[in-house]
Length: 151
Length: 202
Picture 1 (tube, each protein chain N blue to C red):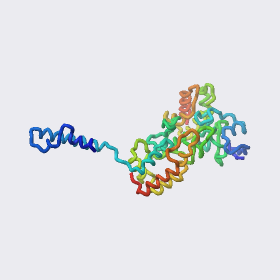
Picture 2 (cartoon, one colour; picture 1 turned 180 degrees about the vertical axis):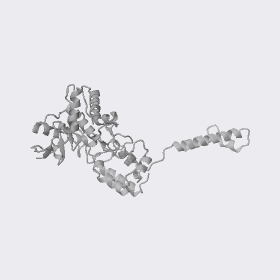
Picture 3 (cartoon, chains in turn orange, red; picture 1 turned 135 degrees about the vertical axis):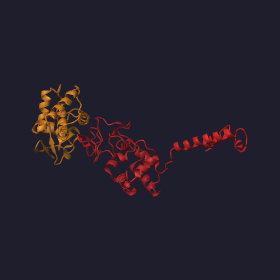
Picture 4 (cartoon, chains in turn orange, purple; picture 1 turned 90 degrees about the horizontal axis):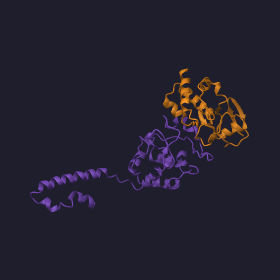
């Protein structure tokens, strides 16, 4: 029974070691902001942060996390950059259907934490693993630049 | 050899002509010089003969399970067709991907079979100095043993790397749906040891 540190709190989870973090979050802890997209680390909908780095929760065995800190979209507004990303997303109407957007927000926040003023190339490299079936890529890019302008 | 001699002699230039002082001597000399030039060019373009002991090793190293992350590009490759890795995955400064999309965002310490995502400890690209794409067997061998390019490994530590590094061993345990190198790992080690015993010839 692994204990996982999520959004600043420890959770003892009744789950096998190889259960993907995504299903621990959604089924065991009812943190449903993290979405199931492909289940194969191909779409980025399930992106969370592990020690500040983006990670795909659908392929991350919960038993391997150890002491590492998981942050989900439910808590991303607790950081200054996360809050600014959420604000830009809302102001610029980034989401269309919105399904992929929690993953997009997490990837964008991780990018801006590391590179506060990213170039388009930085954005491409950080965000190309996060697919958007609605094709909101230009809005996502513009919103990231909007956040960067304020930093 | 017969074809190389025929370039020097030429089908219409019997050797007796060279010995004769005749009106054709000047033409014959010019023709001989031209043919020697062709011969030199031909020899220069011929691939150097690689050590037969290294051939089976090269076949393993060239297999996509190895070569896809021993690239000479700033990105890894995927699959037996060696397509560019999806998602604009980059090499990054240390071979572990872009800091904003590291290899470890998806690749764990083990294969994730339910998702078909390969994994092994310290999953990353080999340094550019260890890029093997586009090399002949001889060049590949020389690159492998060049301590300025192979991470300052002696032949013995190179063999130890091949024997025990989890990322190397992953090549023989790549998860369902992925082909294996042409030799088993024990056969590969036997081939390496035979090559080392012969002085690691290239």
